[in-house]
Image (cartoon, helix red, strand yellow):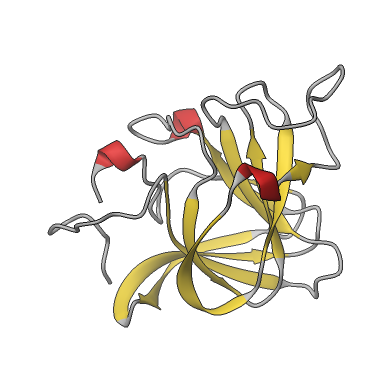
Length: 167
């Protein structure tokens, strides 16, 4: 994957929040090929992990929800911080095998926790996404495990040697 796609790969910088999060980089399988994946064990619905635009090199510049190649044994939530700093959440459904999924802004609702003060807009503020988080969802069984192969602005149409980290 080209860097122009603003791709996050396992082993990149992340932060954790809540309690009982364990992160590891392990061998997984994506499209029938062994691949390096970021594995997170998420303890509860208020815990998870994420990254901010400035933790990625080159800096994250996408303005639409990303595509994520992942597997998860429980439903989770994808949380994005929009250009104005408001948090929005969308369901991240459980799936047995690593597969790429994408979201549109219409799938996001206001997150229950906000860092901003004031009147929240009815829709996400379009512009550079400041952060993404993967966190537990209410009603899921815990601990939940998620494997992430990559997060990208768009599906690559052509891969070249060295684009994807393979185990």
